[in-house]
Image (cartoon, rainbow over all chains, first blue to last red; front, side, top):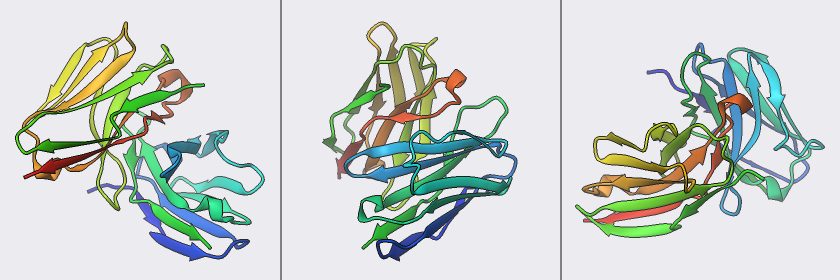
Length: 114
Length: 113
């Protein structure tokens, strides 16, 4: 059963610390998205990659967030330094490059910044 | 700014009843309209999706109605079951823009037994 995996599932950290979230897309999917979910803002796109190349990161605060795909099986989202307002659930989603628009979401990383 | 507006924010329906959630969009370039279902502690999962060349799509108890001229689409859940209790999100995307999803605000549905 192919699925998107994310680690860690939960992260509690203190303000100012670096946070790294990881995502393993479904094998063979060439497009990876990072979304953030909060009560106030709902689900919002942070960044996405196709064939490991960043195509759009306009949703990310550039000064503290960075997203990369070191290889086709790993996407990372880093926050440095973290702030309490970054507390949210971060979702990774992947999509096949062939003939479908369906995005498959991972279980999310719940981040709490104290 | 691309926006998708969803209503109601929450609804309560009796088992066996019909749940109706509405969405309106602004960008006429959107060409893909999915609905996602999310249970607590889980990621959103695709429920059903439609393209603007059809006015209705049905999959089991779930139906999307699409009104291109009004820029509106809706999800109907027939014969609602307690297991349908979840948050539902409409979304829209444009293939030429990389299929980035713009989500509605979500509707929390509670089906009472």
